Length: 370
Image 1: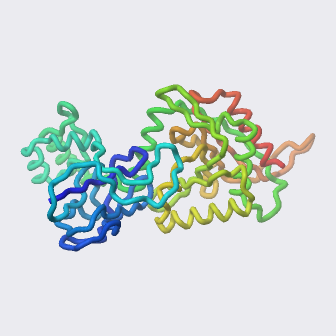
Image 2 (image 1 turned 180 degrees about the vertical axis):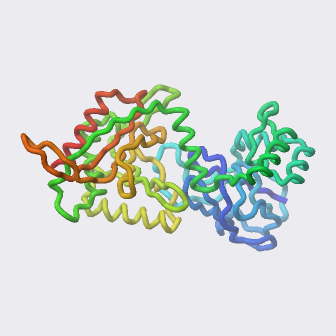
Image 3 (image 1 turned 120 degrees about the horizontal axis):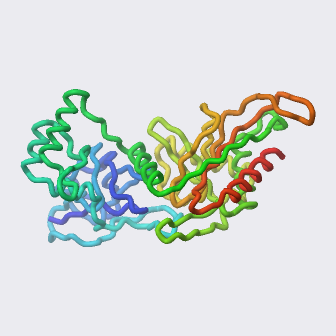
């Protein structure tokens, strides 16, 4: 028997959720035939077969979470191998220096999964008998090991309040990204208003924001950078690759609109429409979700005036646009009613100064006011 494990899906992602198997045990498959669709990093990825052969066993069912380095498929015949064989090729362009074009086998599982693997058979049996999922537990034993006490306590909570619903897919990845940001970033938020009463009816608000962000990044490039908190180093970017937050029922997606400073308005709108359509169809490639240098959250399409948007490292800034309102403004010696757009800029104070952030906000407002 020959085992192939869940490949490294890039960007250091430790796990994936099985969406759908495209083969069954006993099927004969060809090289590069799609074996399974998995979800991770907010995208659906298809994993191809590394060889021609007969499927002896499939590890996991739809909805299960499987970690990098764990068995994925067992092929009948051949010697048992545990190598770093390349599994298929991804049809995606490199968007960051670390992204790979192929799937590589052999990365270590996550620390929590390693702790679960060291759980004693007695504890696993107890968890099965009490209907407790080990994946939902944080172990209190040595090295994070789950103990019988942890299982019994979880069972008591389940009986009193109902079983927890583990986050999956997009929401699980979002929760991890938010936790990483909270642990690593030193955020400061600056708020201001832009008077947009002069905008004609039918103005494409999102595209005006995209253009204004490009202008602000060109005027103050200090916020269009990546920051390495371990090395305390900044990596400036000559291009502006804008992450655009897209809200869906499954969770938050942030596809990347590339090189916004060198594209026409029509081209940018077509590009954003395509990205949103791919997100809705859950067909967006992982490469289109990676490599943003700065992010826009236009939450004003729903509700809210100001916010403290969360920065996703290694980025150092995110712009939030709130609900456009009509409100009194001073025009010379008169008070008039104008349309006003509230803006929020959260920046990582480790990588940027307050003066740089204020100048960025000023350039943003000036562009919107033109």
